[in-house]
Length: 110
Image (cartoon, rainbow, N blue to C red; front, side, top):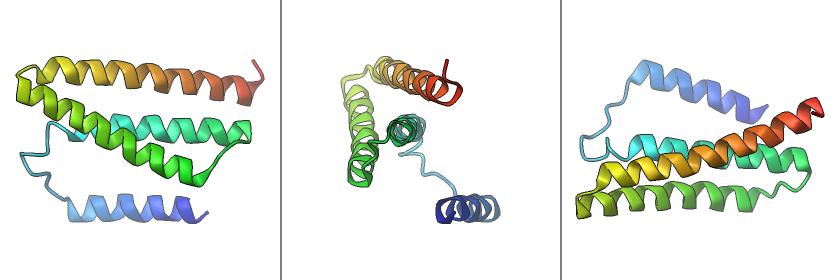
């Protein structure tokens, strides 16, 4: 319940304050969000499988975001930022859909 309350408060504050993202960070934000979603779906899957560990979730969440941002940063430095961004989104997208399929199988027993 605390997590849901925190989510609601966070969304409300975000809508009221309307924070601006610095231009330097803009290319990395969508990749960081996709990486965070991957960690969230992985955490939900492990919770349904009964093997959830909060330390593993936090490390996975942070490392996914940092590694994805570093890959995109490296791509920008090499001049192939859009290609590496696409690659990161594809890989994380596959992981998200894989976890979503496992969650669906667990919930609907199908």
